[in-house]
Image: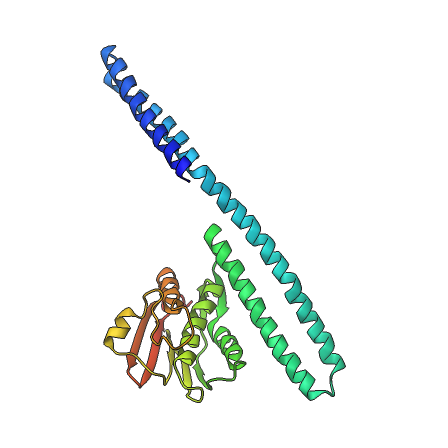
Length: 275
């Protein structure tokens, strides 16, 4: 890296000196000002192209290598996940009378489904860095019910749903990730037996918990990356930062209402997405 910076600095210095030299020589030859400007512009573009190509070529090479490596890893991950899924189905057929065995297989299948979801999200995140993500049209209440059914497999908080029918046009996987982060936070900062209410009325999706809540100072910091409300709770502190990033991109107005020891309510205004 130091060698590249040194060479780039030398190239920049030499190109600047060369341009000054050309300008001095051409000026003495009494060349018309327009011709002089065009010549200087051409030389500047040529040197700029060479300079930029040299600086960025190594970065492009590293990015391409990382992309190829990631694609290979994703492909290799998908094979064992599919194998586990297929063999679980076969074992379920042969263990119809073994209730304990079926319970264990159900847990394996649920974990495999979760792995498949993580695989899809990882693939989505990589593609998002390369290409624009296409939006989809889907039923919002169906998506919410599916995500909550997966949360219920964790045997934690009970959910109460009040969902009206809405169709939205959005980045579906991104929306699922955003919603999952909010639901996970609601569970993480609540007692296991406390209820989480999810309501979809008109254009507003509301997730309300009965957890530890936040005061005004904590509410100000809640969207900061790596900020954690409770350091004793496991997590990286990036969930709500990702929520805000997606909401800003999708033009979703997000509002958080909270009181200490009273719980937190997250409101998502989906007016710009509902069709």
